[in-house]
Length: 175
Image 1 (spheres, rainbow, N blue to C red):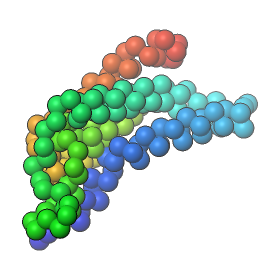
Image 2: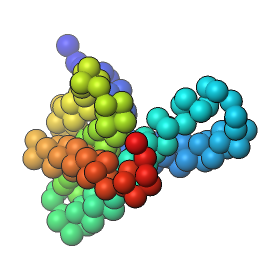
Image 3: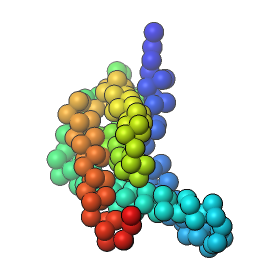
Image 4: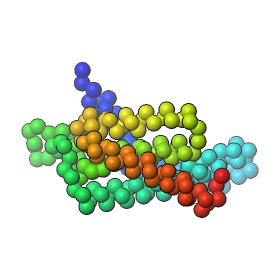
């Protein structure tokens, strides 16, 4: 049974570009809602949650992207797959031509879910981490990353939001 389609669908959940755009649109949406829903009781209840998430998520995703691109540029480690360029005979259609280390998909999805977990602050929300684990595994299953690449991305994706939650909320005086 070929699970390639399944793993490709899972891996799309961690696409760094999608989450970068999500961050930009979320920030714009937050300021728009702040103006449009001022005084609305529902907004007053939701605003601290959204603000806390954005204060953790936005700097975390930006820092992760910068670190990921820097590491991919300065520590060029070839991918374990062959990209489909110039009619290569046995190639992997999911294989990119950039550096393998660290996994951007794994790191990105861990930044998202770690930021969400730190915002929710409930132990029961740890179950959400099945999604980043599946995305990370999908990168290995599609043979576009090694376990070391995925582990490095996941660790960066976990550590950066934790540090942001320790320092940034104090700066922004969030509870």
